[in-house]
Image (cartoon, rainbow, N blue to C red; front, side, top):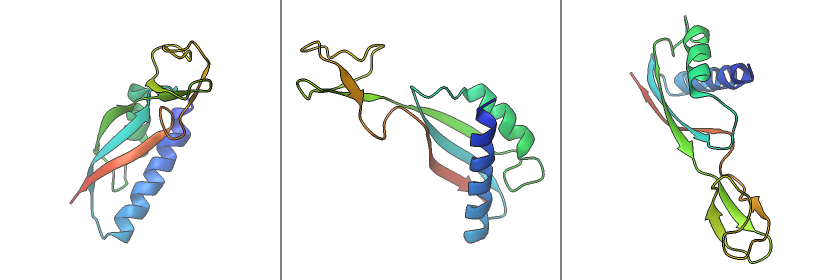
Length: 113
């Protein structure tokens, strides 16, 4: 259910972009979603299809790409991709998520008429 606010934000953003750029119809939206986010592609698509009815996004295709999570070890500083653990593969130290990776969503590209 938490996908619905994300979809509503996305639709609002797309309608604003369409107005600003004099676009009549958005046909495709490429999204990058963090691999650690709990957003489910199928739920996003379902909510989007319903909420987009009657808007410039009606019938638009959503294309999903995962944004990998990158971690940084707090002990040795090494950066490495998340692999089901926040433990550094080199020194065994604890790692934290590098800001801007692995969570949330980003609109990569919009295709429109």
